[in-house]
Image (cartoon, rainbow, N blue to C red):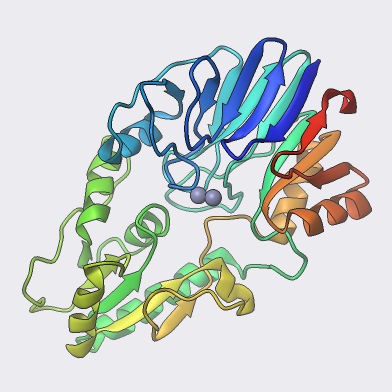
Length: 325
Ligand SMILES: [Zn+2]
Ligand SMILES: [Zn+2]
């Protein structure tokens, strides 16, 4: 019987007998089993201090680009399952003391061309992210969104205009590069570094940058738009380029904005929307759902009311005792 699950502020901890599993800790702890779901900075360790972590091969290589002193380990009762969120992302399934716990990390069940989607897996306890876990957060059809992006890019290129796509360097950047293959795609240097790593893991992704001069032919430029890139984006815009941003938040106009005001906004997301989250929970069939991130309280209410499954937000510092199974 696990004695507790809690959000410590240094990862979500599942304590079982003498072992502590620590999921997505900013500071891995020696003698715990430290498991990292994906390479986004809010999930990956800030420092390692020589403590080995468990993660997918691609996540390990992406992290090694930016973190020193990384070491790895493995563990028999930890299984890493596709999370469909960004390249290398995994859900974490733990088997211990006769219970199976599934921690989703960030995840996405939508079918995409460049990633395997997250698939529901039977479990007793499901710890799920609920970024869009509130009724009303529904994304439009994915194929349609991708089609609209391609059309917008092509009409600009046909009018001899470059386009600047402001995207997260890990996640959206790869999806856009993949979907816009066959066009003159150029990427910010850091994105190119990610792509060189990911090519070794079977992803077909462009690495070519822009150089310092303005492009002489129209290009599709993928960049975070942050830091030094901001001035470059300004120069491209002055030269006639059109800009676009991408976020699930655009789905209901809730106000997320990138550093730049853009000409277009597309509702592209690396997360599940509300209906996809509910369907995922239903198909996993857990006895208990613990919600983290975003609309944890609202989502727990929906799970209780609509699915009849015991649910609650996993709050920092609050321990959920083992008697629930
Ligand atoms: Zn993430
Ligand atoms: Zn996250």
